[in-house]
Image (cartoon, rainbow, N blue to C red; front, top):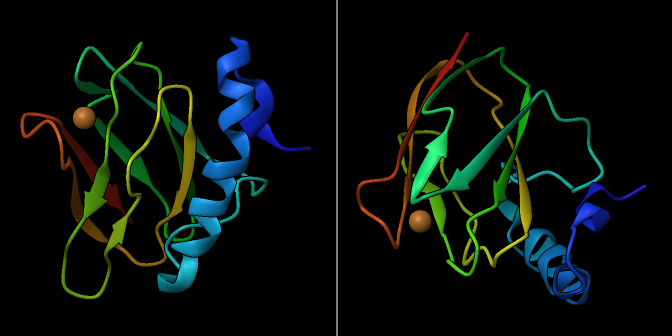
Length: 123
Ligand SMILES: [Cu+2]
């Protein structure tokens, strides 16, 4: 039922509990959806980069942001008028689901690696 349990290594499974807790705690902004929600697109964080680096969505779509970057911690966030989110620290193997409720052009950044950028076009 939970996609978060798809981690390959045992180390990922131990972290599922804390990741889900983090997701629910930060859901007050309504931007972060529950991990079980339907996801339109998966974005990975690997080699200190988002892949793909640009995506297009329909308003209401959700994406899964997966940290697939070995031992590196990431911290995706977005700040814009009317729509913001902050995933907090994303441990290796973790997945955070973010829903984009409104149309617009957005850029997701990583609080740890300033060169990481993900352009999101929501129609
Ligand atoms: Cu990062």
